[in-house]
Figure 1 (tube, rainbow, N blue to C red):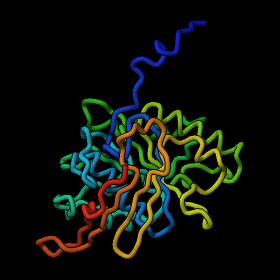
Figure 2 (spheres, rainbow, N blue to C red):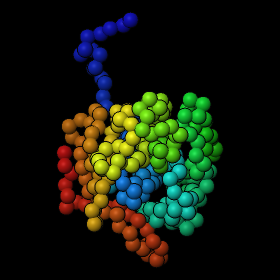
Figure 3 (cartoon, rainbow, N blue to C red):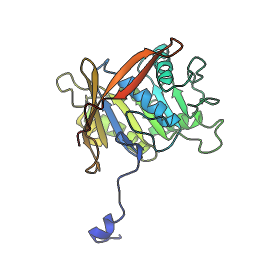
Figure 4 (cartoon, one colour):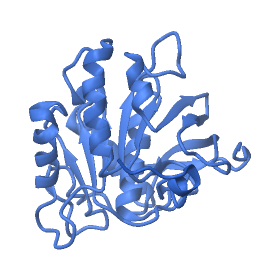
Length: 270
């Protein structure tokens, strides 16, 4: 067994770099919780599309474009399709011929590094191997560089497994698989809070105990708020809360669009 003095052991150990500054880090498991109809899927799709396209989101620019896999399992296809088209227009992308509404890779398009997995593949299948293979298969063609997802978003955590969400033992096995996946690629999971505690994650305590960051989304009449209730290795200079508006209007051609606009009247709270 090799040992070392503490200063030598921790020398050079730093928090993982950002995928999107202030929101998501590399090789971390991030949970986004919010009640139904708060806008979780819209926020998550905007994160996915920003990471894939390099467009700014909520005042933060992704560190680089990357292959994004969005597991769209919580709503009908047509619902996701409508949101994607509106968000694409909000990013200034012509969405009428948007090819990303099939599981195939989005080539020939500014958002081509993003793919959608429509068919549910449980995280627990074959000890995680089934999902791993399915996720990588989507990116095998036509990419010539790294044929693998570099950010995975699950909408929702509940749809990604068949275990009893309230059972700590069962969920410990599920969270272990999520953590193993996040050790290779950043993973974001959407989840719901319990009715009595909107700032917590529904289900077994091991869910919150296994994640690296917990972002809570809430909304008032006009503003939506993202609060980082806690974040491992967050450092002292990261925003713990910011507010934004979900603007829904029409583009110059009269097509509906959605933009997430950070509200500068509410400065970042450190």
